[in-house]
Length: 115
Length: 112
Image (cartoon, rainbow over all chains, first blue to last red):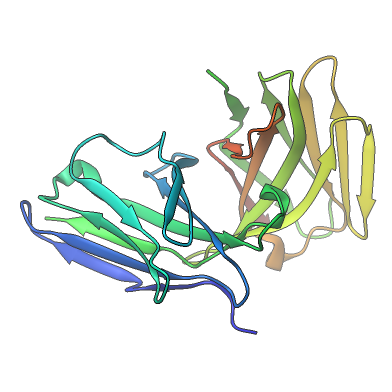
């Protein structure tokens, strides 16, 4: 059973471009969480999704950021018109249905660098 | 808002015990977690403790919780070079919420 997969592992974008980060949860997991880790900071929650639904996006910046988890395929975190302050590691976690945060499994992260 | 604080660095000699400390502010926290992050990797859940417990032991790991002082510690016995990593403390709020609040992480450096 493969773990949580994220790609790309490293992404470089110029200011103003779009960044798309993908997360494939573990098999059988229907809950996906996105976190952002700024340099020398802890992880900050961004958004919690279940299949085709956004459950909690209280940690998402109001502009330029969006997330989806379609019925088929990976979850996507999209950042439009990136700025230097978006440079961070973005982690995805997944959990099985009906279980809480103690069962979140983390992916290896995507490290976004904005030039 | 909720806050979790931990020291940024800890350096120990191989074979010694390591103690990583953490304080949190949310008194309604139900779960307290320790995660390990190795270079270039995601977070790995090491252990967690329910807020109604004082201590939990799992092989070389001992977690102590002082709920009155909102203080959590992780003790690693017989620390090895493979234990070098960043250790994150996190508190999981109760009241139906489910998203942990993470500290900034403690970098553990183990010297041979």
